[in-house]
Amino acid sequence: MTDDERSDAAHDSPEPDSTTSGPSRRERVTRHPTEQGHNSLHRWYRKRNPIRVVINYAVILLCRISPSLRLKRALFRLIGMDVESGAAWGLESTPDVFWPDKITVEADAVIGYDATILCHEFLAGEYRTGPVVIEQRAMIGAGAVVLPGVVVGENAKVAANSLVTEDVPPDTTVAGVPATPVEDEEAL
Image 1 (cartoon, one colour):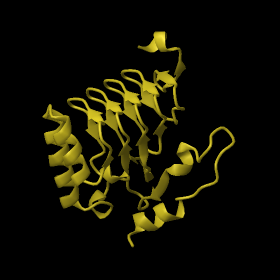
Image 2 (cartoon, helix red, strand yellow; image 1 turned 120 degrees about the vertical axis):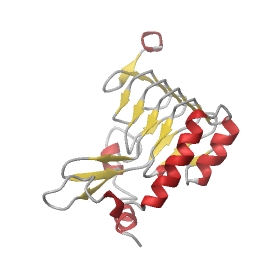
Image 3 (tube, helix red, strand yellow; image 1 turned 90 degrees about the vertical axis):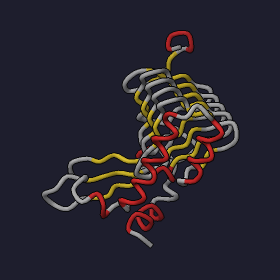
């Protein structure tokens, strides 16, 4: 078992917070301290196999330019993503290159043009990893960024160019930086 797997296993079942039915984003994100005196990108190749990252990058690059939704779903599954039937990825959309296996996109969800789904954050003194779940029929707008550990609920909508730093409840529309709930007419 790798250090990442041990760390992730230790955080698999955190206590739920008082505002949601499950753990918060912060509880789903695993912190990995870095060597003293270095930023978290220093010796990144010890954190993730470079060959795996190159393969992920090549697949993601092909998917970014392919108009075929069926091909994208099949290729994303090959690099470990859980992508259900009917999920749609727009042109230029980008899943996490280092940890695509931490992404789940449920049936009939839409990831818009140039949207980015991140499962890692490289910071000065640590890096963080966390799963991202885009639930059924959720919509991520063009140019939006979803951070690690976030769950976008069923039928939720994320407006274009938003930064999603917290969970989005089902049937809710969020917009802005950071994304906050709004009335549908305001954001879309």
